[in-house]
Image 1 (cartoon, one colour):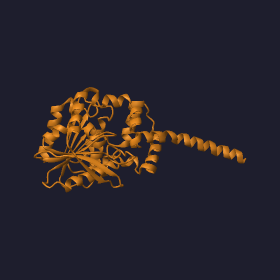
Image 2 (cartoon, one colour):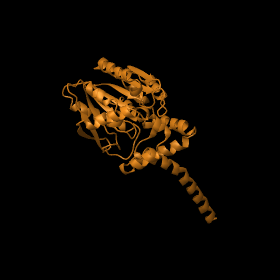
Image 3 (spheres, helix red, strand yellow):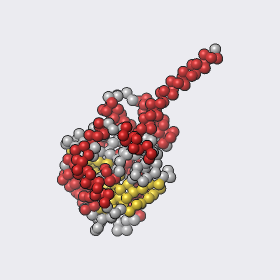
Image 4 (cartoon, helix red, strand yellow):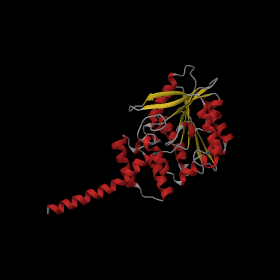
Length: 321
């Protein structure tokens, strides 16, 4: 009888271990991001959807030229401490005769010099002081876990106050994010921010971690029932990374925010579906504008329609400076 009970318990334990194993693997791939593991994960996780949505897919020359320009600039290293004790890094590039500050918040596992390769030089030439933020786990910033905006929103908030304390001329401040960086900026819009923050620019942001993962499962892998997987992922996020999946959601911030937002999204984006920006736009109660660019994939609106994209941003600055 005792041996039978032990066998049953062993079977239950084995079944539970197998059940949790896939959730752990998914957590390690998507959320856990140590420096020594970055190169290996990049090589393994190169799906076609990621490749075709990257600006280098069709705009490699423009992308590389912009990135090279960023690398050639003499920038100042800046540091702050996050609310959970991480040392975070950013690059600061002042502009001659500056009219405003623009904080640049890059996307998932990205970099400011990459994600903003095409826009940084334009903004700088239009008299914008630029702060290229290294999101937690990326660049020179510390961290092991990417939280899809749940913690990054508070990092953006702290960087905003970092700028405000050094804004001696009381210039307008704008927070500009791309992809997950846009989501982080949108979440931060619902927090207390410096008075000089005049508005937000969000390019291809998603509305929640849960929706984004469901879309990826359905559109990339044709999996429409992943509730149990997300449940397991959420358990690991809570236990190890210190956040809940529901914390990575823009809804409450969009309802609280009172400052203007300029949304961009590519109509052909298969990495973050355009429905995300449409949802964020619909629940936003502040002054808002949404530009969906036909034929543009993820973060490619500025490449596909450069004159329109740039003019929209300049008009946004002029209206709210």
